[in-house]
Length: 406
Image (cartoon, rainbow, N blue to C red):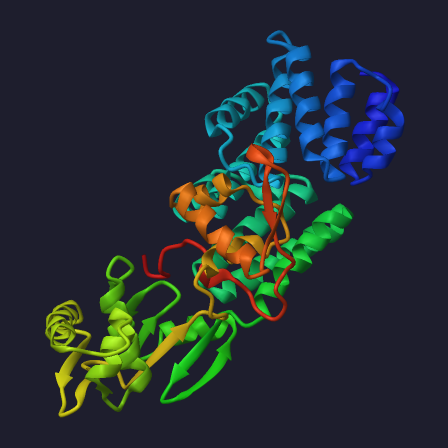
């Protein structure tokens, strides 16, 4: 490797893409193409960066397996940064195996971290943790240790575990300072904001207040019966009853919880559950059926009893009933939760992350765009959606993830 390639690589490792481009911008050999691609990725030109890295991989060919594997890892990193979640994970795993076989531990570890970060984005936390468990960050450079702790913190945040998340971010901040890369330091500081911004709203006995992530964690381990409007479930410390697939039952449960310890009239329940402006006998008959279903679903957690004017919720093991609501009231809040990270997303990537159809995501994006909450650029497959970060709240409870006890 010649001196210009070496100097450009060092500049990239130090977070200086312009310094790297000055050395290799006019060269067309495989190594220069790869370094130019990585530099452009650091500058945000992902489309051109991916093209250059692919050209470099082809130029290296099969005889230079390690260099080609590094290009595959670089392309995967560019895909992740541009929120292209459909890139083939098998290719990344193959590149990691090649790097491991040739003793390139640092880049092999980086490949694992990319895989873990992708899994974290789409809510597959158990798999992300398994990838992390295969690595010993103490033997890696400071930049790799920073990434490791960021993924650890991300998993903890998505599992609503504030204390482990804070400890991981402390370690990440220390490692980022040692690495001396401004972009990594900025990413760590951005992650800290999640712990200090409201994560949800607590609605109880006619009043509401905002909760930090650690407050949510404490609430879910308390003696309260929680109607969780973030994950659409009813739970106490020991039992979780998911109602994500039963929207009518969840609407009834939330209405009863918001009124606790009082009851809710039948007309109000009909309006909340069936979106009916005026209740008739058919609505009342259906209400009796749905309340019976809710009573069976919540058996062991709470009793739903009839009163003169409606129904009341009575917890069996808990001392009070509360509603854990989203930090913002928005029909398409889960889509916004991804967009407020400041990155540009395609509708296909959002569909992968949310585990839903692309058409469903597109309808949500169109509705948000009509309301002026998101904007798009590009056309066809290159169309991307973005929105400026919404100040004052974090979105951990809107992203796909299991419950803390799962």
